[in-house]
Amino acid sequence: MISKSTKQEIVEATKKYMSSNGLSQDSFSEHVRKITGQGFSVAYLNDILKGNLTTGPKKTQINDKYFLRMADAINLKIRKTFRQHHNTDNFVACMNTFEDARETAMPWGLDGGTGDGKSYAAVQYQKENPKNTYIVRCDGDLTAKSFFVEAAHAVGIVNDGAAYNIRKNIVQKLRNEEDPLLIIDEAENLKDRAWESMKRIMDDLKGHCGIVFIGANSFEAMLEKKAAKLKGCFPQVVRRIREGGFKQLFKMTVEDVEVIAKHYGVTKQTYVKALYDTCRNMGELTAMLERVMREHDHTGKSVDELIELYCNVQRRMRAAA
Picture (cartoon, rainbow, N blue to C red):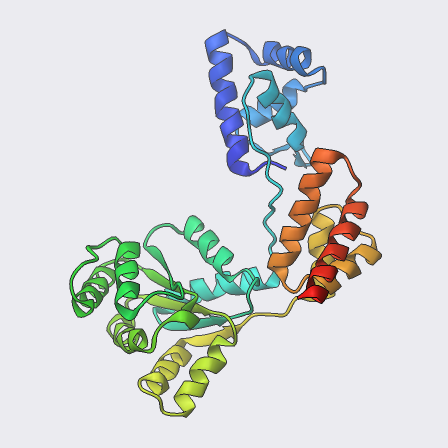
């Protein structure tokens, strides 16, 4: 499998190759056949050079093999990828939450287990909506001050000075932008002192900038527990996030596994069940399937054989832990 960006790279390199060698589409198709020993349709080439990924009146998907033949013909070395995008229910829920936060200019919370695809969805949303979309990741070792240094870097402002000044500058930057969105990833790691400042940011940006707090490990319950004990700012923090809303992501089901596995050509219920029993979340599932497909590509071993092998290894590792 090759990514869309890699396909674009192949197309641009092919255009340059054809231009520098004075090759027409007919002559380049013949060149591909000579170099690779495999057929190559001029009609496919014409569509590919136009930037299309489909061909014909039925919009048939152009197989990756044609792009790989083009790359071979011009001696372009590319790296194959076995990662695929999966439009899961959790991905859709995340994307909807980001859009809701942007439209309402309110704080929202996203709570889901590790490996549910929250960070992946945030990055994808930023790629699709790069203008005024900012992601700050809360690593576990960040102090309250270093978190705001990271936040200042993410929104593109000077990140030195006192935490108070950095906070005020972040607010000023976001209030002056059109439809900004601030995504705080791994928010379960935020220190209590940082939440004090985040409460002020939520107040200062209400109606001006959407904020999404992404958390794992029962993030919502963690905040609720602190709020119930009337700890510090947490009753106010929870109330402010609830003005937008908390979205709880879904646990992975066997039906989810069936849909994802089918993308990789795995349809036997025996192996779907093995994957479901072995993988605890979507992250583990896709990582295993990508590993299987990579080894299948390199060794020629059957996909079924490799799934059985890796599932057994995973079971033994869990039993030994």
